[in-house]
Length: 147
Image (cartoon, rainbow, N blue to C red; front, top):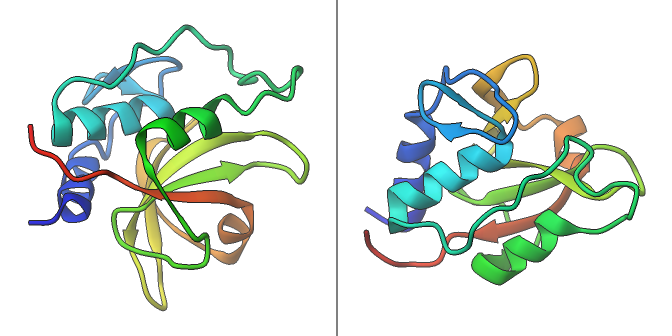
């Protein structure tokens, strides 16, 4: 199984986990970053760096691209238009805003889907509809490796 396929299997195991800001515990609570951290642990074991406490505005007042910078440190950048199963998606929720939402593409092709943890919904698999696609700021792949 490829690392991308393993990432999707891992992410699907989190579906139904409630949303909980700054958490990363399957079945108990997670936010979008916590979900990505959990997927990383499922693929690679320990996380690559500690995550400092963060507010729900994700450094928006300072316009600091915290998630984008961390993704560039640990993940492999891909062209945004080359969709693939297992890709990590980084979203800007508004034009001109910092990227502050993450998801994992779970299906590609004519009806793409992604798995994410969303406020008020928890972890779910959603259609990667045109409104979501327009919000994609960056696309990354997990590096190869084993646990």
